[in-house]
Length: 419
Ligand SMILES: NC(=O)c1ccc[n+]([C@@H]2O[C@H](COP(=O)([O-])OP(=O)(O)OC[C@H]3O[C@@H](n4cnc5c(N)ncnc54)[C@H](O)[C@@H]3O)[C@@H](O)[C@H]2O)c1
Image (cartoon, rainbow, N blue to C red; front, side):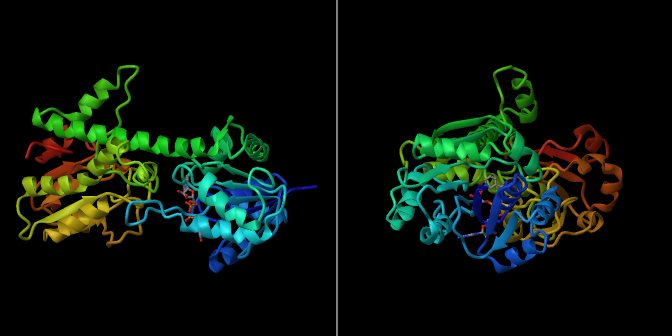
């Protein structure tokens, strides 16, 4: 008999996953608490942008293997893909996982498998999730099975990564892990690596913590390089020519929905042991304030100075502004009374208005480049300079060609200098 899979949470992770299972022939019930999400999906439309999602969703709906609902239904497998944001106290907000688990309790039956895909602090699957599911009177690991299968897809490339990425699956028992592997084998072509649930939780967090700590190292090196008047980007490029070295790029801070968030989850119950990770997080979070100090140093006091901010996405060539360091930088510059005009080739929605390139640059005193969109490289500094009041560039991403901009009469600054 065809298995029925209930996917809780139809966002960036849950909806593509639901579609994948449906096109593999599973009967899939996609569940979301938001009525408008369910209505949109039921019509074959999408509420989030993801390459190929609309086509996959329509294929899934036309096959009659996918339906969207507001309520959980009895099923063989439950997959939880709900948000786990960072709470103001820098701990994981697992309230969505709790409510999703509670909604499964009335329908959970012997032999079912529950898979948590959301990113969570170590111990959540074995602890909180199993505790809530035990309210059924059934025994986790004996009467039903529970596993954690962290999602590691890159937005914009989700469908290819769902198939080709290696997948780590941690069970609360070996049997739980094996049952989850059998499920994901229906579409995963990468290797499926089995472990216990707490290890799997820590693997996901370790991946993003590694990158955050590495960026913090690069940022710290940038501060030290400035003391010696050395270009940090050259230092990193040359050091990375060593086959066992991979220093990440320094910059104005760390954004996106994973890297600035996950390290907090990994240290939330460890004080002494989490010191390096916390310090790295704090250093990366301090970069926006440092960038503002650099602007003050280079441009001078605000008075009526206008800063043309280029790129507010959290990284180059995307329109994603989640946790972008540009938000605190713009906020801090405004607080210090600088006039701000923002231009971005990709971002349309931001907490402040996005201007045209022309009006962002017009009568400005300095360009502050925060996201290295490739289009910035092709702009002509002579044309840009003619519109500005003063010719100053602060490139925090090593995006622009210094010789070209200096040749057009610009005072050119790369990320950081001794103040
Ligand atoms: N977006 C990514 O690229 C990505 C990558 C890896 C891991 N993750 C992790 O996956 C998880 C989900 O992230 P996302 O980006 O898909 O989130 P999302 O915000 O895009 O979607 C989550 C959906 O869950 C729904 N929801 C909330 N509570 C619910 C409940 N009790 N029952 C049913 N639906 C509920 C919300 O209405 C929302 O539509 C998070 O833990 C995230 O950290 C995300």
